[in-house]
Image (cartoon, rainbow, N blue to C red; front, side, top):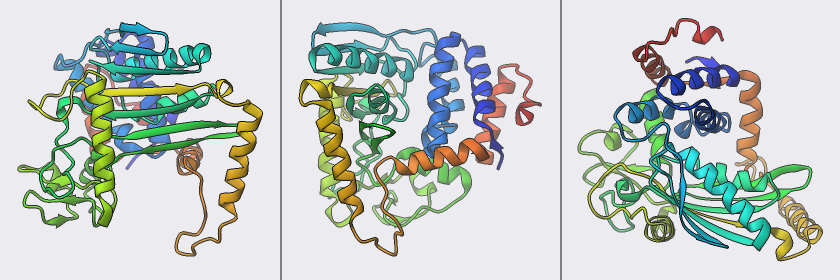
Amino acid sequence: MPHIKPDALRQIGYQLFETAGCPPESARAVVDHLVESSLYGHDSHGSLRIYEYIGQIQDGIFDPKGQPSIISDRPCAVAIDGGGAMGQIGATFATQLAIDRAREHGVATVTLRNCGHVGRVGAYPLQSARQGFIGLAFCNAGHLGRQIAPYGGIDGKLSTNPIAFAAPRRDNEPILVDMTTSVCAEGKVRVAHNKGESLPEGRIIDHNGNPSTDPEDFVGKPGGAILPFGGPVAYKGYCLGMVVEILGGALGGQGTASGETVMQSNGLHLTVYHIDHFIDEDDFHAELESLIKHVYTSRVDPQVGEILLPGDPEYRTGAQREAEGIPVDDTTWGRIVETGEGLGLDTSAWLQG
């Protein structure tokens, strides 16, 4: 398994996406997002997606030169059509627009439809928090969602439907919550499949509803399903998944998991809050830091070993991988090289970069 320096992986990605027809600025927006995802340990939304996105461009599913546009515009509520662009282009545009509107009006909600896979949803609330705002996002998979079984069912009927949240801190990295409403992301099952690894128990069921740890029982045909999070109280994950379908899909205009199964777009629902419009920022940060200190006063479970804040695992992994390189499994790396060769690129020096 190669370990690739982040800058080297970015340069490989830029080459691939620009050769596939993306303008340089669009290629950088997409690749920077994917590399940051892998840096933070979310390989399911990082290097794994490079060859997948290129394939979708080549198949004509998404427009490498597409750009988002506003289709409904009110001061605090905006609907955006992604123009068939790569998802990161549309979602970054939508997030910045929400930040700009919240700066003026205190709060703004933006929805996004008709674009590619937006990637790691936590990136967009984090974009808000790094500019001093609170961000909250809900994201479904439009009509594609057929991966998660409803509570009490055994067939995949919903998407993984992530929810993400970020809040700024002074002199520290933001609080960051980025979680699916399923036990795990679909991409994490694919990563395990590519590595030839088993899954932990309680993640998936096979086509007949039997518990399984073999990723092939999900990715193969006929496929099984991922379970909603919660274990014995999995109805909680299922209920939150339905919330995301309604906000991201029905309200956002992209559609829900019902109907014909088609890969078209995520449905993204993003709200940004300007802290100072609700409470003095000094008071907010003082209360947040007080909460953090309070949480740290708990006795530590020896089986866990430490208390972390939401986002700490990502930041810790990011620092380690920045120094040591990003691990890319052999299957994924082989597909990236194959994609580059198919585009006519000389890939021989990639691992030497």
